[in-house]
Length: 145
Image 1 (cartoon, rainbow, N blue to C red):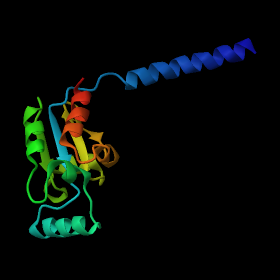
Image 2: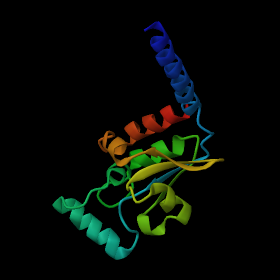
Image 3: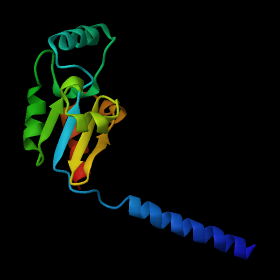
Image 4: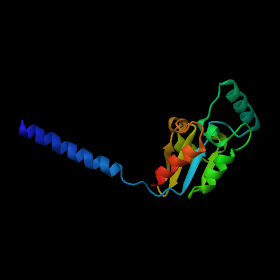
């Protein structure tokens, strides 16, 4: 019985080391990239705006960054106070590396590092911000620590 317990603890210790290695500090983020769940065409913008008003379309990143027609002043303040640039794209105007990293999951916030792009915040995590630019700012600041 003691041998079995020792084997189990040994496996757990190895597993813990692997998990610790996976949780090592991420590479330095050089850019935040947000991708809206909408297209940048006139038709895309119009159908999104109407759909959002009717409750048939939704983008949690749009809720954070935009008011009824234009970017929110609170968002512009938060974005300008970030130490790292925050670039936004729509699905159809994002560069290929961004759409590949997003893997069709929009909206999303990605981080650019020397190792490439990685997903930082999913739609569910953006929803937790409840439309608050300050809440998104807090999440981004936590990622930098």
